[in-house]
Amino acid sequence: MKKVIICMLALLIIITGCASDKAEESEKVQKVEPEDLRESMENDADAVSEKNSDSNKVVSVNEEIMDRFFIETEIDIPGKRYKSYQTTLKEFKQDELIALLLPNATTDQIQVESFDDGAAVSIAFQEEDIAVEQGTMRYIKDKEIKYIDRLVSFAAYSNRLEDKELEFMSSEQAVDQASSLMLQFGLGTNLGEPVINAFTKEDLGDLQEYMMNYDEDFRQMYEDGRLLLRDEFNDEDETYRIQYIFIQDGLPVFGPEEPELYATGGIEAPLPAFPMEAIIYISSAGIRCIDLYDVVSDDMQQSEEQEIILWDGIKKALIKKYGDVILTEENKVIDIWLEYIPIRDANTYGSVELVPAWCCEFEMDDSDVEEGMLRARHADRFNAFTGEEIS
Amino acid sequence: MKRTKKIFAMCFALALCVVSLSTTVFAETKPYNFVFNSTSGTLPVASGYKNDSEKKYYITINGVNISGKNKFGTRVRKSANDAVMSGYVVHTGLKQGWPYGYTASVNTSTKYYLKTKKDDSSTTSTALRVKGRVTY
Image (cartoon, one colour):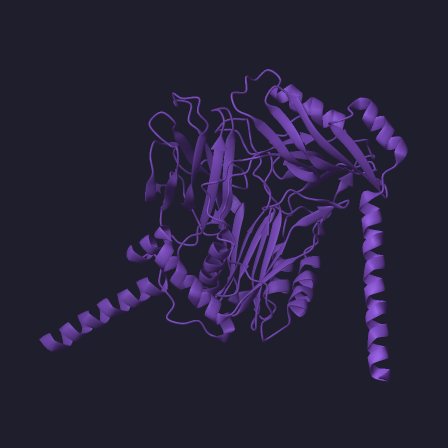
């Protein structure tokens, strides 16, 4: 009887605790400042409403800002000012990479080959290879990981990534190892929350079979003799895939999971920015592959803090862009968020300015896209200081 | 003697086969799914490495409304400095793993991307919806 009473009491405490947490959470999200609401209602009683949470403000917008142009989203408006950062794409030093990634190699065992007048360098030791360009680095421990990377990439495109634990190491240990390595590269932006996926040898075998059965490109390459299938995958092939986006001043830096940056400069003009990303593969043999894409140096010259444009400014920027366009179809912005964009200086090779920008994503018809497969996305981005379009 | 020569030739051929098979590592394939509302903007397909020595890249277009009136233009460029790596190609229909040649020297340590647009010679104002893959 005593045991029953103790159990009931414990249950009651747990339930009360959860309810209290939920109540606090709910309070944080739903807390509305009367003054803000009044101000908002004066502007547009039906279209815009605001909620405050700590120093941030959530603005809920449901408005037709032009003919056939709708905004239907909630915008997190941060209650702070931001800086811009002048930096360069990371220049990886060969000796530091060798010390970090090829510690067992002696100088005479390492082969260095330059391409494009030294713009790209290959550093090889036995099967290991480091490909380096400014801002970009790929380390491959062995050739087989390239094939596994290919299979796993396909899994990523077709939404077949899985989150599980592998026998040789826990996912937590794998993340610790990856994060500790990342810190040694001396990058200018901070690591965001990692996304970790895991593949057993059975998963890899299934993926290969799936690609042969359902992927015409894959099958064609096999039939053309441009790839070899693996007879089997073994314990050493089991791998964690850890993907990082980057963070600056609490905001995400333009990354691979976002809509592409639409460029208006024509087919001959350089792209204004590339997504920043890091991917690390860890198997029982240790770090097996590292991909760093468009990362920047930790030598960052910061500007003074500046005010950013808020909802009114975003609205003006959209009207400036689309006000003169005859829209034949309905357009709807369904998400607006603030991020940093690493804008490349077209005149100075390697120079990058990290600028806060509002990203406005449009609703797209993806009814023809299979569930989980890559869907078309479209977004406009506006400099959060000036309101000018980044394209 | 003849038999020895024959065995030697067979061994040589076999060795060649083994070398060729074991060095076959295919280049990265990246997917895309784009909508172009006009001919004025360009979009990049994610960057990738060329892991083999083949002087070709391959384009697959498996949708959606590409046609002789609504054309799709592509060109491979180098990610680091936007150097031109291929001719500009105009596509007017679906294709599966169609090979195109690079016009500049390629290597396995450089990252490339495909720059794409709705081609200027398109004769319709209907948005171009196009999806597929590129293998560098």
